[in-house]
Amino acid sequence: MKFNKFLKLSLGIFFVLPISILFGNEMRATHLSDRVNYELNHENLLACGGGGGGGGGGSKPGALKTKKLNTKLNFKKKQLSKKAAAGEDTSALKAEIKELEAKLAEMD
Image (tube, rainbow, N blue to C red; front, side, top):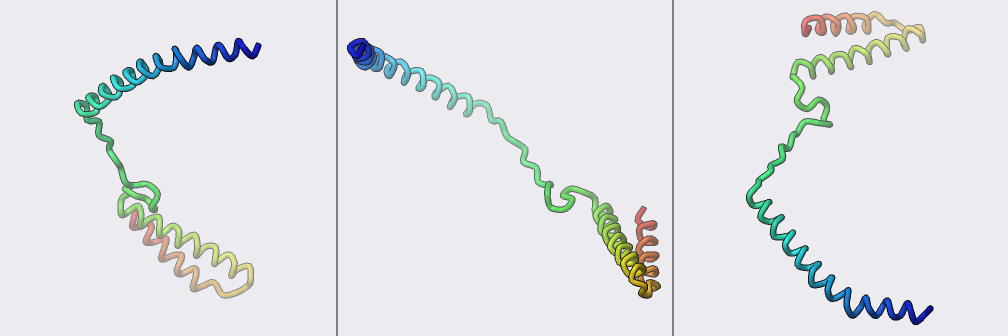
């Protein structure tokens, strides 16, 4: 059994390996030169877009202002509910909320 493995290995080393190296390199070289020719003749340009991630890249300026006002309004409403639950004076917060709602109405 060991002799059969040795015989197969030696045949692979002496015959198959040199042949595969010769033809394998030729096929790789042909493919490589075809690939270089293709790249030189066909310029495929990618469009790189900016935009994403930074808080509304590409959105309208008015939409950004509206978003900020909505965020501020929601924050003030949370403060109002906390102060009302604690029994504190909420008249100043109510006035601020009305102003913010008026500004939002103007934006729309």
